[in-house]
Image (cartoon, rainbow, N blue to C red; front, side, top):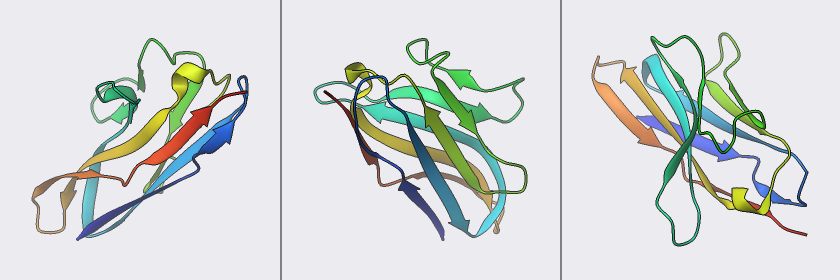
Length: 121
């Protein structure tokens, strides 16, 4: 069993900052990919930022490059999304997605419960 718990969402004024976290726990052998997605009302879910095994560095959507930073401290099973210079267009429900190998050596794809981010004046 694997659990993902997201936290850190909320309301902020334009130009403000928020930090999201996604803690992964349970029957984990190896975490492979950790990715943040978001879904705004009436829009499809889109990739925001990700840490993918085998790549040279984080991936970011063009719309958030230079403003968002995804990170996972060494030895932790938590992924963070630091969001700076927020705009109303960043308003959405943010979801954490994790691909991993569990302790029975099976591939798993897991989603967090989502956390609301609202940017408005």
